[in-house]
Length: 542
Ligand code: NAP
Image 1 (cartoon, rainbow, N blue to C red):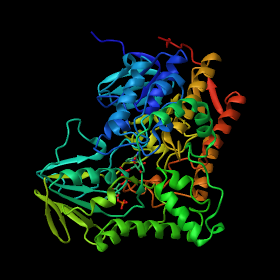
Image 2 (image 1 turned 180 degrees about the vertical axis):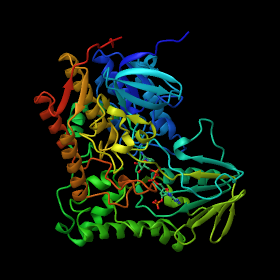
Image 3 (image 1 turned 45 degrees about the vertical axis):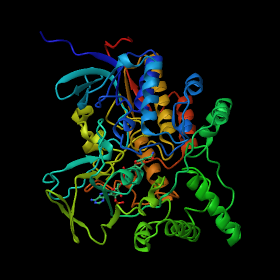
Image 4 (image 1 turned 90 degrees about the horizontal axis):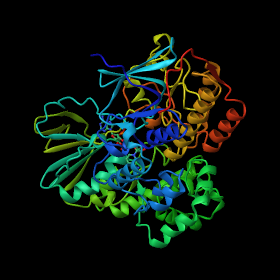
């Protein structure tokens, strides 16, 4: 007997930090909401990236949820930068604490979604076979969700094990006694290197471009600090909401050459010791604008690298030559450079000896074949648009999202795109340029308020005006050119994916600007969104 497909007011795609919050907000607002997730557990990025060493490099308590003081009070992060298992536990705790699990289905991948103009709703295909109807479709599929593996010849011929950091298996990968390769030295690769180095018989790190790695400076959160965090909750929220990038790190008030040469060296030493993104945010105000200031800091970091890595040739290769500090997203490390002092660790500079192919037994470079048991791809993601571009999303009149975005994403506030009514994507392209959950949470709040407004006014269709989309997208592109950080060499422009349009994928205009625009839009009855009524709602709150 054919069954009637389920119908929801709001269907959320993706059980990452953004999707879980969207489900919570939609349900609290009285919508019949449901969430589908392709993975076998919740956590999104923090479910898939379970490689040893994976951890936050934003402070745990600024990255977790802030919508519930009770949640903030009762969850004790153990470290300033929590490791992946703790993060996954936290997200599962949130799902259970707010009784969201019954409304989440894992192992359910959206493979197509099309808008039906006649009824003002979305028909969503799950796992290529099942259909779900939803008035509003919210894709919270994230920016770092589709792993990228370069098209290296012979990948299928390698007889050993291959794994990507972003699809790390749930069963532990055994490095003991193995000859391991890690390809890629972005944030993922450099977190993994020291752990594998300790266990593997031999580790070869294949680096194409060195990154400006600086210490994470992680530490356990003491009982006193836990207590202070609880007391400071309101101040923390206020600071995060008013800082440009959603961090607690205070901005500095001096430019580099306001200080004497001696004072600058003392300041650099202090920066080397500050945790995580403090090194970008609390640095001299002109660090990313002033070429000389940046060069001096880079030279300081280079000296640190040379002082840690004993082999001068290896040290030289680990010092970036092609970009300045902050032009790419800087990784933060624990024991990364030290790992290269171990006798079982070797660095291969792919600019000197590129990979030719994988053979059945290892990796062949211009210098010969390295025999291997395990190849780890730490080669990044199809950032920003990767997940949305793989879901075969079709809007009004069958318009394919991939065609609408053939020159790169066009959005309004990073939440909607013209021609795709009732479709939203908080935490996607043009979302954050800083502490992701903070921006993404703003977007979820905005989408929810927009849907509540539509419902209260009796509207069933919400669509952004194409002119407003063009204005916002132009603003994003202009802000990208003016942005102090992240040049075109960064994957934030899609540069790492062959054939991908080079378009800025973040929102560099800052969180305060986003929040002030949101306030203005709400004060103006959500103009420039366009609303329409539908004959039959047919979608009831659960
Ligand atoms: P990534 O930063 O894009 O790094 C990918 C690495 O793979 C780069 O070193 C890249 O070299 C290399 N690569 C790509 N194609 C290659 C090829 N054909 N041959 C050889 N090498 C190749 O990716 P990621 O390390 O996974 O990090 C992505 C983002 O995830 C981070 O920037 C960060 O936002 C997030 N992340 C965060 C944390 C955290 O601490 N919270 C941890 C991990 C990741 P090139 O530089 O030469 O292209």
